[in-house]
Structure formats: structure tokens, C-alpha cells
Length: 259
Image 1: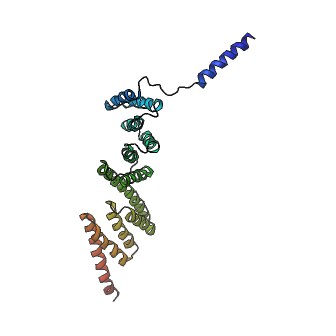
Image 2: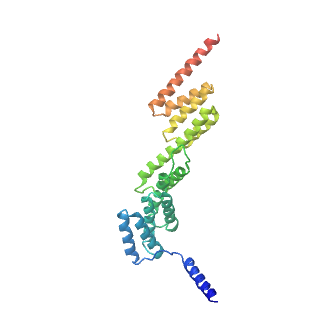
């Protein structure tokens, strides 16, 4: 009986210990002082400590006037620590839960930047780059007067340039395999979606190269001519002009050879 009683007591203690896991940290200050404490740590770049203090405010003062700002700076803490996935999560929570906050435009911009920061080089998977481009375009569409518009445009162009390079590399892969029709599909897709990037000139020239290899002389001439019309790259223009001169010379000499 004594052992049974001890067992009951021990079981009760285990239920108490494991059933009462760590809850949200309690704030000993009011909402305003809690925010000022967290912001001070943030301004001193003590992001991990600031993160804890902002979280206290969010948990303990959900109806406070400071809660949306605390949510934004919580995301900024993760951003400052280069934990971009967590930053995206917290910025998105602000956009979802505090849609009337004056920080929503900043948060939307930072979602795009965070995706961009964690995206991979062009030869690798471009899922995060695509998400960055979509988030940044949404920001530019919704907040055309934001102070971050100029920087957002730079990030967006960089993201689009990386995506266009990915398309170009895919096309080049098929070109090297001799699958010229498949290569042209990728190059044309690049021109359709990313004509504002530097890879557009190379894609147009590459289409001419595919048609040249297929001995589709007239089509190749038209493609190279488009390069002359659209490209601002002296190097690409010179290459296209050499191809045009060569094809025209070969076509001019062809009847003589058959005589």
C-alpha cells in the first residue's frame, strides 16, 4: 500500500511537470515600457534579446497599441540575424493579423527582400527567386508611394535577371544537346517574360544560332536582324552582324556553285 501511494504521488508529479510546459514569458512592465525596453535592445543590435522582449509584449499585451509595431520589429530581429525564413513568417503574420498597421508596406517589401536574400544562384532551384519577384511586384503595385520603391525596383530587376538567366541556361543545355527546337522554346519564353533583362539579347542571338544550325537561313537572318534592332550590347551586335554577313555571302555564292 505504501508503495502504491508513492507511485500515485510520483505519477502526479510527472503529470504536473509535463502537463505544465513552459508558457509565454511574463512581462513585468506595462506595454509601453516593455516596448521601449525591446526597442532599446533592437537599436543596440542585440537582436536575440530584443526578439524575446518583443515576443513578451505580443503575448502579454495583444490589445496594446504597440502590438503591431512589436510584431514588425520581431520580424526585423530575425532579419537582422539573417534568419530569413523566420523573418518571412513574422512579416506575413503582421500582414495577416494587422492589415491596418502603418507597417504593412514595410513588411510587404521585406517579405520580398527576405525571399531574395535566401534565394539560390541561377543554375539551382529558383523557387525563392520567383517568390521574391512576386512579393516585390505586389509591393510596387500596392504601395507606389513608399520610400522603398526605388530599392524594390532594383531587387525586382535583379530577381528577374536571375530568373531569365535560368531560362537561358536551360535553353543552352538543349542547344548543346542538339535539340534546337526545344532550345528555341526556352529562349522565346525568356524573351516573352524577361525582355527587360540583359539576357534578352543573348536569347535572341541564340535563337538565330539554333536556326543557323538547322540551316533555316531566312529565319536565322531575321533573328540576327532582330538582335541589331534590340540590342544595346556592342559585343552581341557585332556577333550578329558577322553571322548576317556570312549567311548572305553563302546564299549569294550558292547559285554559282550549282552552275
